[in-house]
Length: 355
Figure 1: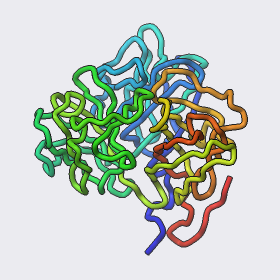
Figure 2: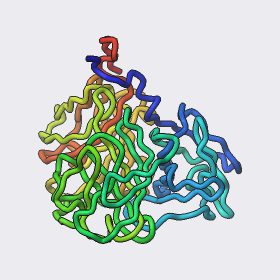
Figure 3: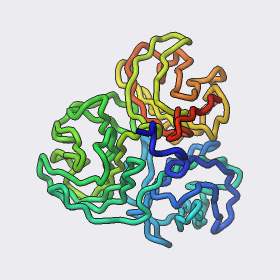
Figure 4: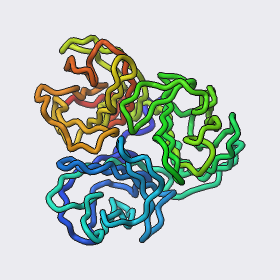
């Protein structure tokens, strides 16, 4: 059996960087596919994370969500801050707002955009007690799920992929947190993608029930099951994605995490000790080791590059923590999500190279 079924991870996940120029109908290219989930963040300015997906997308009036500690609101429509008006075959189009374009194309501001491929289409999914609308890519283990909650504890929602290791759920029709299920912290707890909080124990999130190969479960809480919601689900695929945990040792010669691939993106969250953020690293903002540029999903802050010795190294088969910093390297526990630049060994048995 082949080591991986995905020899070219950039067909399913890719990161691009660019500099805004305030041009109306600015065409951003380089993604390499028609993205179904695009997550944009200004690097050089303190603008909120901007998220658009193919299910909520409506050409000319695309609905988007914002993400950081101060933004817990519902779906938004085109505004004075500009928006993505079109998702196309190799990127997207930035439309100017009436006052500025900070969401995706402010003049001279640098941006990063992370992009995932779904199905480039949607389907109804009746696997759960709640019927969902799904854009699912079974090969890459990624799906976007839209559903309307019924307020019943133990309701289930079909997701369209293998058993998810991580799920992000956001209420679309009102104010709420960005709830996160991660297999490493279990089904009795949840994290919040928009805060630094440690895991919270609460049956209202996932009804103390782990996802299966067809559905995930929700409690009766208003952040998961009383209104309209969008969920992003991730199954693990050998050589392409990994969702795990590690314990730091508090030394500069710190923990190595085996992934089975050279990472393109790694997000790390501390889950014990004092609260800390979701630290985001990728191979396009830092093209060589160490990874110095840090963004956080829980913050609108600009990219931090003050730790010049770096946070982690991206290696041919995983990543190594290289700092004592509490954000990734203290003697505490951490969870992570990671996506590949290239598999450690491709389907023909050929190994990749380190940086």
